[in-house]
Image 1 (cartoon, rainbow, N blue to C red):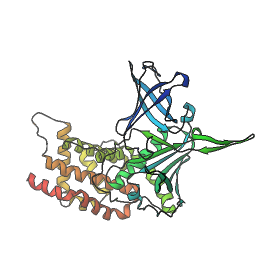
Image 2 (cartoon, rainbow, N blue to C red):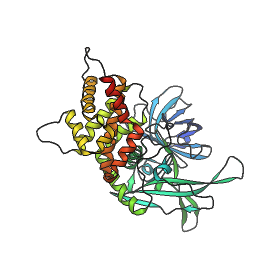
Image 3 (cartoon, rainbow, N blue to C red):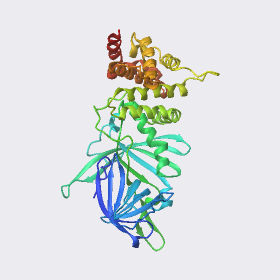
Length: 424
């Protein structure tokens, strides 16, 4: 069996699989990899789904007596063996297409969850659930933060251990499919968390539920007793989880008292809805290992242009040049600009514009800026973008302290000093 905590671990499971009729099932291997996603390979030439099917299908299966539902499946290879790409896999229940369109709850445990909330696991004598926190995100969507002490079996027989699981809980008043749950809450949560932790954050465990995950546990002559299952969920994680370079010391924390949680989270999600492109670019920057300097600098240049378009009021009749956009953003976070740029404000603006234009409008007679210059420009520009995002999230009164922490972590001013001196 697969460990319910193993969302970031690869596994392979052998079982039987079918589309609509279990009597026409085939055998095959379900493969899950956090970076590659879910794949089903059957050992039968009979395809469950035509390779040219226009719409995705739902495949069901049994592994070691346990039901699995594979959503958004496409046939990608036919022959002696057939292969199917799988959008997501739900463990523990057999669901149909209607069930998959009526999901109402998604639970996410983050590897960095306790650091982001400054909470500690409870003592073994604790039991049950802590006072849960809830925020109304509007349109029937809520986000909760819950801590539940669970008893889990250990590999040693007859031995139990208590685990305090901290989960962000997404609930929808109206039925939703998996991708709507991901779009509305999963992505904003991870991208806001990345700005908070100043590195990518990843999911360690996910569970999903809805009317289709209810099972009958007892039935009588006139009634039946049903139980709502929270079924483990697997899909291709984006960004791909990777070992963090350090334990995060977040710039800010997710509130853990009800009043602050219910007031802050709706604002944060509204800001993300407005600036989701910028958050996505920062997530890309924080989660990707760039081998060379140019792509990283270009990502930060795109972030500057994107955040300017969405934060600074548009000027009628003209499209501001890159220099004007950078200067507008620097004014938004003045005087924190001085903490990050020091005495090199004008040098930073001029060199950033020159470096970006050189890379985009390349000419055989031009030479790219030195790596040291691009490193300094990237660190300074991302610091400015993050300060603007923090301002929009509502941390105006804390920007001086946050700028000090960002500069201490990113050392933008130090690298600007070195780059400016080397350029003289």
